[in-house]
Length: 120
Image 1 (cartoon, rainbow, N blue to C red):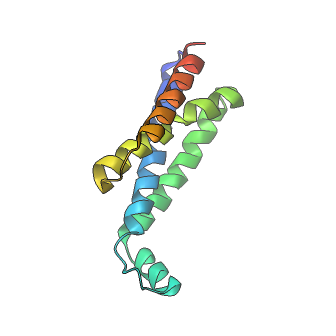
Image 2 (tube, rainbow, N blue to C red):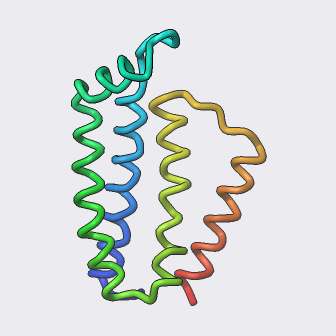
């Protein structure tokens, strides 16, 4: 895990994954609650955010494969969970989503687990 390439791939993967999740959330917002399923999909597909999200996940696919080629699967998956914390933070900042104490405690435990995996 000490390699600058591994750390760079890990960080880039986390950022691109988070960006994709936040872009999909942005694409799914704004249609009225009474809109039909078809109207919601038309609205989402017409927004650039959905295509930004798709692009992020295409890039993430390549980054993830490169990361997996250098790190054992169990370690990679655990380190990949950093995205959970980043998505929660992004949701809080950009969409003003609430963060309950329980959710915050869960993310802190995940971050502690990631730190333990990273240093071992």
